[in-house]
Image 1 (cartoon, rainbow, N blue to C red):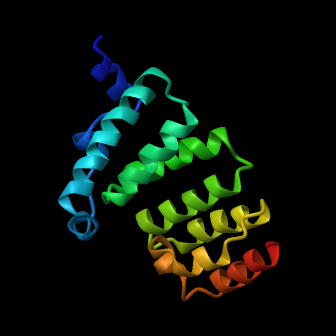
Image 2 (image 1 turned 180 degrees about the vertical axis):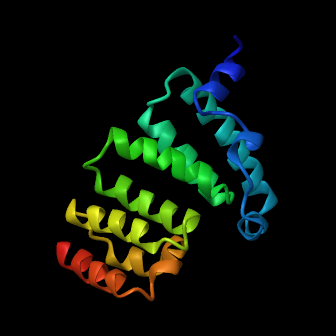
Length: 154
């Protein structure tokens, strides 16, 4: 079995395995940044093909996939990372962001993860207020309460 076949089997894959990207998100990424992102994803996909639980590769690949608009693929990697690091507040925050993007019709899922992040010590209330990934949650009363609580964590 080749490395690329092994990577696909273990979840690395490539654009065909990532699903459909958000056209709006794709258009917002400048071509040179997009090229850099795909290069990084080749690197992290190779690492994940060899070491499927590599936390740093999971985190970076999820970040790049989300930036490119592959929300479902980014969510899958964020979930894998949360299984490996369940008590990491930043991992939980990133999972909340992925859920907000991939499941905008189910805000409770993202809010539950955001609540876990804050309970674990996430305290960057300013980031929460400005993060475009959480835009779908901002009008929710639970979001406002979590932002206040995160501010008190500082």
